[in-house]
Every structure is written in structure tokens, then in C-alpha cells.
Length: 105
Image 1 (cartoon, rainbow, N blue to C red):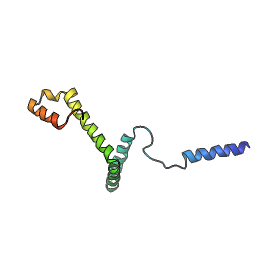
Image 2: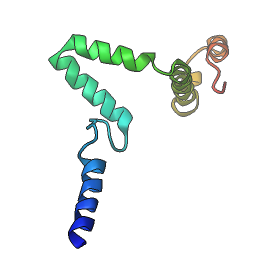
Image 3: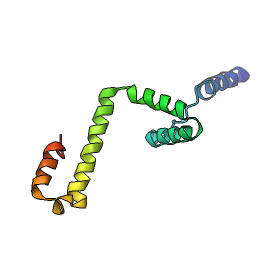
Image 4: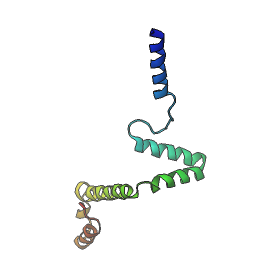
């Protein structure tokens, strides 16, 4: 009976950990890992990297757009608040800049 239990546990563990696809992106910080994998692939085979990047960019376009907007707002916020770009640019240009890229959507 113990052998059957051990074999059952072994089968479950092998199915859970071995008979699964292996992705290079498992784990934390998968965004950086995707970037690293794509950069490595670009060095080895550019066409494959371009294809993979195109496929990834075509998925969930609304979320891609939202992430792009978030990054734009972060840059604008950093420029205006942390770097103090408003201190070195003419006020009328700052006004145009703030209209075009509001810090908060």
C-alpha cells in the first residue's frame, strides 16, 4: 500500500512539475524577462524577434494602450514635478505642454 501511495504522489508531482511547458518568463518581474529574451533573440535572429514582439504587441490592445498612457503620465509627472522642467521652459510652452500631456488623465 505504501508503494502505491508513493507512486501516486510521484505521478502527481511529475505531472505538476515535469509534464508542463517550460517558459523562460516564469517567476517575478516577467516584463524585464520578456525584454531580455527579446533582446537576446534580436541578436541571434532578428526576424524571429520581430515576429514575437509583433504577436505580443497585438494582444490585449486596450491594456497596451492603458500601459502606454500610464508611462506617458509618469514621464510628464517626473518632468514637471521632480526634474522641474517648468522652471527652464517659457510659461506659454509649459501651458501647451500641459494641455497636450495632462499629468492626470
